[in-house]
Length: 179
Picture (cartoon, rainbow, N blue to C red):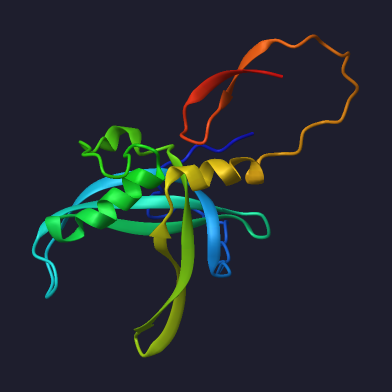
């Protein structure tokens, strides 16, 4: 029986323990965008107030499973290069070409990124978390896309004649070819 997510009342009984935080080894990983929220950044010494995209990104690690990383994108001309890198990573933007950002197509998008450790101090304690250092162009994801796929079953197949079937190209499109 699957339990549906719901609001808890003040006197509900709880039983689930929190999950253990997984600090990934720094490196390159495939990812899937699992959540996007529009927000407003109040500004800082380095960046004035602007719109903000709050992303929840599932990092796919063969050794550690799926790990959630939170990432913010700021919609400002000072961070336009970072926005371009993100949209190039998920296959929406081509290098050197303009793009109208399509936020409705962000959830479910896949790509590849580099994870690093981010060290910070909170309440006098030194803490470390996973942080996205850089997004790679979508072609890098395509090179590693089957890396996280479940293994195919081994079975004998009757030999077939060659036929036309589309296959992915390195540019992310589909091309007709013979097998």
